[in-house]
Length: 511
Image (cartoon, rainbow, N blue to C red; front, side, top):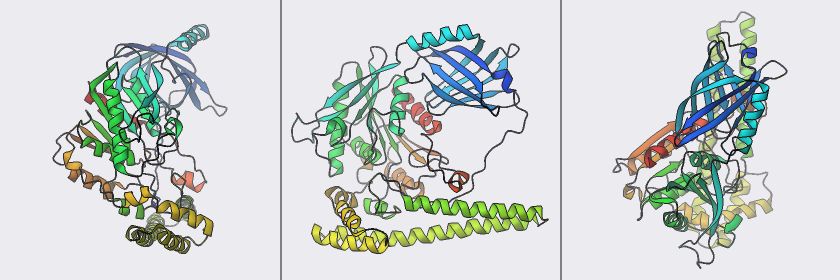
């Protein structure tokens, strides 16, 4: 569910390393080692170099499919060095031994930890290792699939997608990925939360099926779903496909959903045959009208960035930056430190109060707008009223844009979602369930949604609830105040902590 709320900008402290770090010169060069993994081993090769300013950087090569050229951050302390492959979601923390010719430590990736020893190698040996890795077989294979959905009008008109299968013959545990509504990424892309999870889970020996959304990709022949039951039927069809497929363990097929997909997974988990396990990432607990009303801008197209929210966040971050610069000047002039800190706290409180007032006012107006849609069955009449209300809420909106958005808001999907109650079937979910939420999720707010879900699932003794500090709805670390003040808008990929939390829990269920 791509719902965005106004967030309160808070200061993010940046940790700094106080101890004198290991010299960059000690790390420069080529490092190679063998990582023990279940059922075999992987060759790991890390090349360390220095940027123009002397900052160390590294490149990871590994005989594991897409881990051929992954950039790594290098954090070196007085007695250790940590390599972070953020895009790949893995890291290595080691200490130099053997006169600095060896790094011994722990390799960590979603669902897996192991000891690893890296030896410094010559340029010639590094070239040989690189050739070996380049020629190594991929750690998994992919194939296009066609799934006949029970909700399709004809068995010939089905859902297309991609199945990722681990290397080997199986039988493998498997999981079906269920995306958020209007997720633009294709099932085969190398970006996005679900595709990152697909990559990592497959490397751990779990087959992953990701279907193209209805009306997109290879599912173009299937009419877009207008109600939750159709998506639930698609999820059930995907699980049935996997249970019948050679090489898949039919008793270890689960569901993993994000946003709306998480609620679809919970609904499917309440039906027979139930999944072996399910993961709900950022699921909603409040009803559809309540959730929609709290988005910052009903005027935005589905999946479109909320420019109004970003503008406010940037404005708030810049205001705090000004307050801090002024505090520094005052301190330099001999001002009382307690008074300068009080000034910063007052500015933060002012922005927080203003954001809350903006949220409350927008919520009331948008809830009333959605109530008009719910109460007005005649679409033409509802659209005229809604277009007029949108113009009042957003004066800069053109009449044509207001009419287009009014038509979308009165579509069958939106009308169905307004009355959607996520709690209706929760009491029937009995399989192992992971509820994962980011504390900085401003689209499906943790405080309003997670307790309601926990209450609905209280009869299920196999529910695991996890909260990840500082992560948003896409399980990314939000932009810092400094980045916003500087006008940065590009967010990082999914946080390794999120991938690890999902990976470790899934592996516990399928062992």
